[in-house]
Image 1: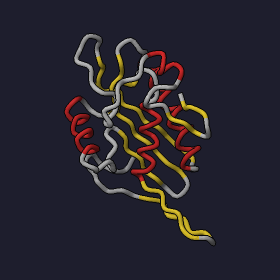
Image 2: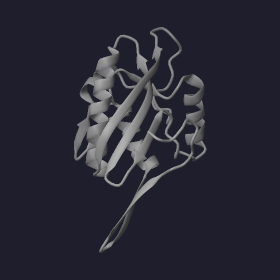
Image 3: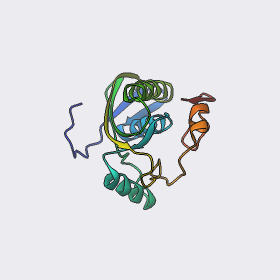
Length: 167
């Protein structure tokens, strides 16, 4: 994607129709992508290590949820590109996690945003090891879903698209 690290520019797509205009921002697409990614089994958290994830939780708690840690979206005229950075749970194959996250993001963004996804780039930069201090899976502070909830798509992070849970 064209934006460099640390960039705070939020691009958007604006469409004019006979009934008005529609604007879709990068941050809206990033939120959809983040929710879809968090619902995938083997994804412990989004972001780049415990400190940025903790800062993301604080940012959400004080009412600035526009920044989605570990998710960057770029909206074009008809297409969307998404970059995700995540922490995997130990015991899951990284390629399987990446493929499942990619499929979930494609599905959720195309269904909810109505734009084609041209790429979903995934960086797995950390592993949550068993027996280490458990962190919350989300910045909202919700408890991590059980493996059964993840497999069934019924945990607190489950994403529902058109009445169906996105795996």
